[in-house]
Image (cartoon, rainbow, N blue to C red):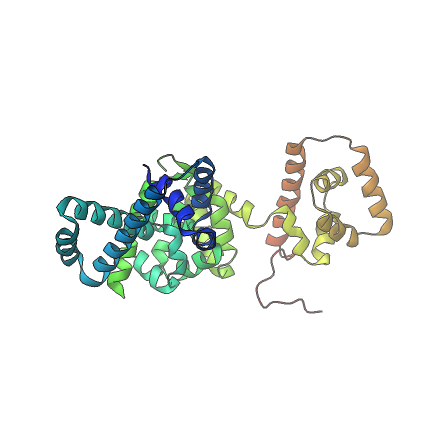
Length: 332
């Protein structure tokens, strides 16, 4: 019987209330797999339920002994209790479960960013990038702050270039890091958007620091830097900029391009643009949007990109402000 089937039988055996608590503590992917397995269960003989409950209890006891008495002590005790073969099986199952738990990179979310940054600073940049990819942008930015200047730039570059990662490699990296942190105090490849992760991360880093990192990347890989910049401020982000900025941008945009771009915008952004224009100009723009008829999504995306390019040029010239820094406010 597979481990998944045993887990499903165990959930039935412990009762609905306890099963709910167990499911709440599991990752979503495991809940889905268990749900599918539960749906396939037919009748469960009482002796099978008792056998699996007994095995589960043995595993719990084995883990308890390993944690509090050490591996050698656990091996001796289990051999005396269950015999060598059963003891070896139990120890192997518990070790696998512990490694799977320790090997989850997502658990690094709970690690102190300063401690994690200092630990990662001695690692290969690709390893650093892999860890940053598994952290939320806020925590990743804190980890980045604790890296050396040398590693900040090269790790960001590796993260931006990352297109896929091996879950097995991620598991091994996480296990090694988990063990080092303790000392200090599916087989397919998955897709990964490095540019987006870097953009989210740099949006949360000090503006000067982000600028310096991007400029260093730009010197050697201008296209890579451009792709990151393109995601650091999106067309929909225009809803967050001051009205004066909107007016400056709109005044320099071809009206058909603006109508095309707004066809793919949400209502909040449209309202923000309309608010920055005269009533007559708004009427004309709405008419232009109506007469466009059906448009291709790539045309809308191209129009939005053109407007973003203009916005960035105006920002570089100091004519507009696109991103407000935390704590900043506009002064009259």
